[in-house]
Length: 266
Image (cartoon, rainbow, N blue to C red):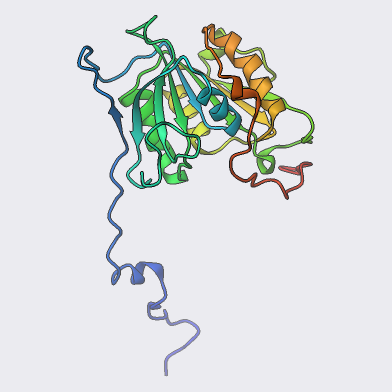
């Protein structure tokens, strides 16, 4: 008679590896790529080599740079999983797009300051692929500035919705000559998503980079804070449309119903 306690049981049909034998694997997603606008009088060569690459991820930074009139649309980052249906012909904050702009193309045509405006979410599994594309493949910047928001669930400490704050993280090479005079992001707090992936890519490629995170995620106070911090550091003559002060909340604050006194890592 078999010993049911010591005999190896037969494989279960509910094991994941067994289920995969009958389910065809999902086809891999095509790689993201840059689609550049062609000017008949200029030849655009890849990789692009900007003096500064600005990556706008937070809602206030997107709104601020959307109202910068002295910028030129030079292309877009195409994510095959993001449909273009519903987007307007002219750039709009309501579009799901990743447009690429030049902020000083006429003054510095060879190494301009580029802006990548992320107006659509990037899935976690795609962040490192997008980061490599922007940092070391089709764009090779001399310096990178990333503008992101603080997620209250990842922050160790107290956050007041009535007070705008900003912190920074830097790569090793940037610490030798920092461009922003900000306090460092508190120890044990976490940054994730595309901002973290971009910082990792910059560190690997020894690129000077600063990640500036701000709180709250929406509001005129944080918009003014970003404007006062970033524009002097960039040393660019950027003209702002009059409507920039009429800040409109776009989207929902996912942390609205979450406590701001985080017990992360305690």
